[in-house]
Image 1 (cartoon, helix red, strand yellow):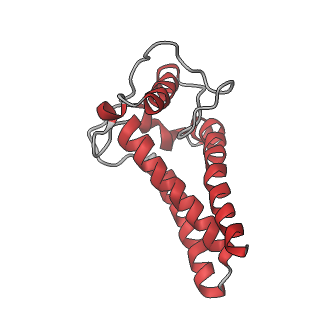
Image 2 (cartoon, rainbow, N blue to C red):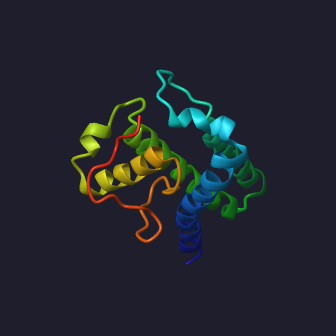
Amino acid sequence: MIPLVYLLVGITTFIAMEFVARLMHKYLMHGILWSIHKDHHYPTSSAFQRNDLFGLIFAGISIYLMIEWMIGGNLMYLAIALGMTGYGIAYFTIHDMIIHNRHLKLREKAMKNSLLRTLIEVHDVHHKEGKGNWGFLFVIPGIDKIPKKEGVRAQ
């Protein structure tokens, strides 16, 4: 029973990270931290963006939690760290490599999948309008503006 609790904590952390990311994106990245985030909204040939610093911050927190687990043995730290790490990997794969076509250029293939196409189009609305649709991995009907037809594609 106890291992199930840690698994649920890891899964809950993964899901919670989307809401943390949405809030950060709306209130910090498009607010006082715009100077770090803005290069994400413009085409670039660089493999790295200043916006990547946000991922490094969360990776640092996850690493810290893993170190705490290794030192003290508290599996709760590990469960939270693994949930955060899982979200980071999913973010990098879906948001960077699929939606924004960075690194492996997966967007074209992803457009053939209806779920990924919807996620791409919802995120494209954010880049076209510069507001709204603050999420990265999940489309939430009633919160996210879902276009009826294919929108403008993000860079």
